[in-house]
Length: 406
Image (tube, rainbow, N blue to C red; front, side, top):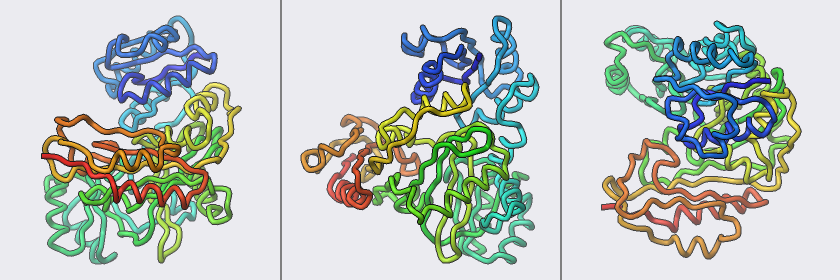
């Protein structure tokens, strides 16, 4: 088996996927925008071949690099785990007749309106949505659906570029900001009330073989817009409880509807007054280090498990479900440069046994905006055998630790 991995050097956690592939015994080659020296020695030494290209999303350059790598050994798999790389890799797979995620599946997992149409056709509940190509389209959807609404880029990841609108004036401003007036196509959706979380999987042959359920506190849109909130992502170890049965069934049904085969997936969901609703899915892992939480919570190597799914189409590892695990983002009190921290020593003394790691940029480090995400500034990651106890500890961290800036 000869596996080619796209962009092992950046972002930094890409190295973990490469490490996982190298652990399987397969021949592993890599294509990167960076020199091979960007990788640590132990990963460089394990590579079968290496190609550097100007851009891994330049499909011609990517295809030519794969062709060069195939001269010594046929390429059996071409894998990409970054959202922006998924479509280019799928197109090259089909061009070179390499097994893996198809262009159709990659497109359905990127184009929000097409995604929603596919899951509705499979009988899966989701928000009302539309592809909007003009101001008139947007106004018609708003009139038919009612406010509040969500406007977002067709291929946006997470809450990137997403705007909530509650009246005609806000809608017009959002359409201008998103360039709809200049011909850009966007997605519009009904705003769903309720709790938001995500469901992550590794699938083999379209069947879920490893899965995890996580919760956002608060929901993503609010978390990425509100400075004073210290938002949390919490992975439960109670996924085998019957309360997650419908979520797991919906996840498997979505995977089937979109043709996700042997791949990681990351699916957002809502649960509220209108019941359980599908939000969106990507045929790639989640961001912000969530797989590291899964590894710590379950005492296993998820990167190696994924790699075995790709190479051997079976997974010899199982999550222990021993711990729930979570991450809490700690925002500076203003934009500028970090000047110091308050309450950190107290938290480390109280919860030392349950802290996975603490990330605290040095004083003098420029801050990043609230919209930068959960790992943009400081954060703490924790685990505990009891989900409710973990939530209590993470709330204590958010209430105690202050990040000061000037």
